[in-house]
Image 1 (tube, one colour):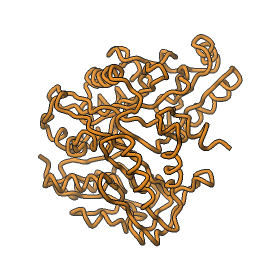
Image 2 (cartoon, helix red, strand yellow):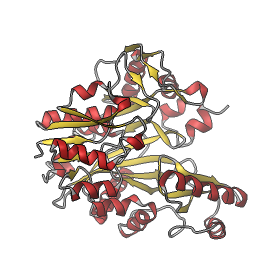
Image 3 (cartoon, one colour):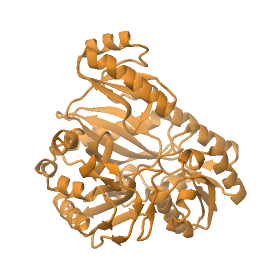
Length: 448
């Protein structure tokens, strides 16, 4: 087992990793920017090292400074968390070249699943359903038009190196395809330094259902069931739950087994998430693989009782998975609401600033993952998520009731948050019945 781990991240995930390490008896080193110098979790780590200015390009994305901090503090491994450098194969490569273990998959596996075109080809080999579309990268508008007319509108243009909804455009005819193609290329180049795009059939009214997987270095791979992440705005998840409220047992089994086949085909190790699109007839198609821990991992932890961060660390240290597939339960229902410092009434404009008053929810079945406190100043430099509220109850209806109660107890002032929107979602008849899709919030709840 490792003796000391450096955490190359910030906020609630940094705190989450510190806690897991402490329970495993591992010392922690946390790097931070000048904007995070007052973060309370820095005091919980054994060592904190400032690596640069507030902009992430001057700190959390500076590989050389992170490696220097790791070498100075003499750590065994680096945990990247999510976001920032977590899915950068080059970072993993540099870590291991410096004799520091990267807590994540191998470089080869990251490359295999990180490129969406390559991942789609891998899925076909593993007999995992794929959405009809281009066989690979689409070079120009002429080729794009040809493919779109063959598979039929609507289609979606996607950045091969994309994520978080960037480099994606829907098209319902030739005109919107040409405009969307150019826009997607430009956005992909700006966001990922890679303008490569591909085209797929757009599955209307589809649900976003993902499968959590774990794989060790000894050939063992398991799934930890599915999460439904259909409640989104601009491809950003707002509410996640497990199990998916509408999957039938046969589809659930096929979906989860497909995820395991894919990671085995890729030679993937550590924690990962295979994301699928599920249509109204319960046909499912692979979207992508996230080669890291997910924001919504607590949902899976609650229904399985398995600590995913600890498992990541133990797998990276060379240990075998301590359980087999038939030993992983799916107990009750868990729901997570992402609490963002944004104003939903003003087009989700960020709401950074000082928290003057904070009352936190609690009670049976309630878990809160957050790094904020009264007096904490939310910096404007990073993602607006300031916490994750998770509930776990025996049934979905009980989980919804507990979440509503917990959200009503959660008070942050004067910062604007997404809590009012979450309460609206939980009261919505379609959400209660499970009749939603990835476009539901924007199409129905936020429609002017």
